[in-house]
Image (cartoon, rainbow, N blue to C red):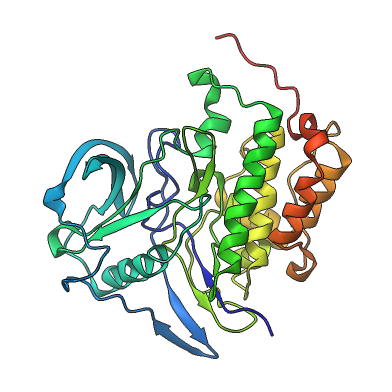
Length: 339
């Protein structure tokens, strides 16, 4: 019998909207259409996390937070670097504090998910501010910012990521996702992308952004939420069809493609064109000839048209473990501009 599951996407934790902080100065333009529900047949039940009631271990008094610089902004909120009880944190709060019931529901759902996650490759939830005028989520601060920024803006900061480190990053992401998919109920991210992956001082990659999370108790998840970013999304989601945890595997394949090419996915197409190309015309990103066959096979398997033909993250971890001797193949030779 299939494991129960939860999905996540571009919501309100710590990468507002489009993704994690530091993805190029701003977080992106996610539409904030978040959901977190327990599915049981056709019934959708809200995950209720009481807001504003005392006694919850994760409640944080906003007076205890020393706010620093803003490090990200999106359609739903903004992220600040701060200090809480002597510890560096990232604080994500709503831009609009006159909150609708739907927004409060989304906040409850995200807190419900994040408060029970504990893994070195998942961003650590520290707590939440639940006062109506200060509603916010507090997480660990991850200093290197998003993987997207490091991969695609690294030349500006003169940061180089060697092939072995890229392989380790691919393993970190797979470990974090394998943990999420192993949770009971399972957590399916559904907006996995390089802007939603944060990199710490030791170059460990952490999965973040759980604002589109959905709990699945049967084989498939409904696809009624229109959040997410087409460049990384599985074709079944782009077609608004039912989906499952294998949609995350497709997105992971795009991230591995980024790691081995140093390129942004579908940079020459607008989002609607990506929907048509990937979702309806079966197109996939081009794989250069100088990538090791084992890596090409992994990416192509992640991009299988039929979700059930894609590997699990447990399978992916096994395949990555065999690639250690092929680490140089994790990156093409990319000419760095001297300017």
